[in-house]
Image (cartoon, rainbow, N blue to C red; front, side, top):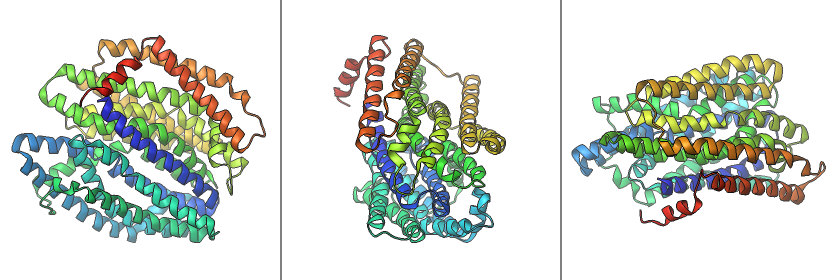
Length: 510
């Protein structure tokens, strides 16, 4: 399991790092004014669609259904089932894209009500329409990725999203060199989004992954309706962090630059969330589906326990690191070009609050597969809806008094609401099983992370106030490196992890 987890998390890490480079260039190109707010509001819509369809979300329904058909009726029947899913998803998203294009002014008004009456609304509508072709390509890409994941072929699906960021970075670099007007630059960048989706689809097709879904045809019969009845709730539930950010953006749209501050702060949260959360959702669903299907309670407990250990062991130190080092990280990554000192300070404050919700987001990713593997996609959906409502209600109150920071705190509270809801429902319905090894290791992981966080806090004064460029990079790199080294050493000393055993496990034949 850890080998597959490492494959997916490595690909996601590479994609997220390219995403940082992309967003750093966007900050330099557009800054945080009206054009940036409009573009990022539209881009947020595309990001929700990306998470809704990809990064493990469709696994919630597709993988268990495909595995059941294959085990019951054979490979040919599984390919026919997948071909119908692929054809139906592609046809449905083509029609949906056209409808969304026509309704885009209403949609932008809903997700960014603060834009009404300003030029930002027209700009956001234009940008969002230019991005829409991505939606048509994302559907077949997601189905093909899900089928590869079901066969435990994780490498291609983990690294194909790199093309999305590579295409956008190339466009931004050309626009920066050409010193393009901000509005024109935003439009050209928006148009590149659809091209990036096409590149990802062509890459998957070039690897002959489409043979897993043949013959290709659209169908809306009883079987397909039953599949989508499970798939749609699972897809929405798997995109919980993005829905919470949408809730925050809705409230933040009334405050100038707040949408941009929240967006850039959230990009830093998405690095550890992607590495841990996406890998968790991608790897755990097929693992737990097989264990649940075989009735092996020990295998279920083993998978759930190792998932909780990985979630805690990676999310908790990331939370403390982002909270303690928020300002130097934001200044290093984003403070250049049109992105100024005040923007860095506001983004860092938002980041500190968003970081407090990171363990909850990862916990949701670790708990949800236990429901998905049992064919239950409604319970995670209801937990996501509850968190969304909590975030909106708190954001209205806290956003009024504390601006973007209050909205960020509301998003974190919404995430914890969803996590506690899943934990309570899972315990009452089938009982989450943490084995003896997990009960022993989890407290030690928490202790090691707390010690690492204390070390980072004690070294915050090392950064010179006026440091720039290379000096800031070196000091921050040394702080992070020391934190990781101390954390890893404490895990070994406390008996929470054995690095020799982990390396030996990776060397064993698959």
